[in-house]
Amino acid sequence: QSRLGLRIASIAPLCGSPLHGFNVRPARPMAVMSIQGSSDSIIPANCTGSSCGPGGSTVSSDGFYYAPIGQVTDVWGTANDCVGEGRLYPTRYEGQGSFWCMASEGTCRAGGPVVRCAFQGGHTWPFATTVQWARTIWEFFSGNPLTDETRTYEAAAAAAVAKTSDAGPAPCDAPGFV
Image (cartoon, rainbow, N blue to C red; front, side):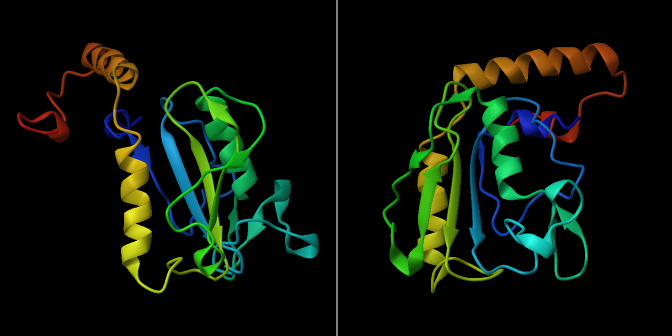
């Protein structure tokens, strides 16, 4: 298991999903904002009818199977102890280019929100320029920093790894690494 995952506060995958069979619970709760185009055929967010693969997976244009976004957010929602109904997750670009976001797993009690965003488009950036996309993600990251709770997970994992490893510190443990 990567220790780097214990040092990351939030992630924001764009036009991506885990391969079928690799949609696993993260090492610790973490805020996630997943963004997909509604007509992405490279890595579709969902499957419908005959476009479904094994286990309800989506089928990409090159024949690979991916976890549908609903299954992905369910896994992260469980990890983040989310409860309640999904609700709108407002951003400054709500409605532009049919862009919208939902806290799809309700209110999360650990790690931060699990947010699903969609826009009318394919396997590409959600806006005409990358400025809006970058600003949306930056605001999400800024609102979900590492907390004492997430640092506790990091410390416990570092102690566990130190007990089992005699190979010396990992590169990310070098002095000055933030």
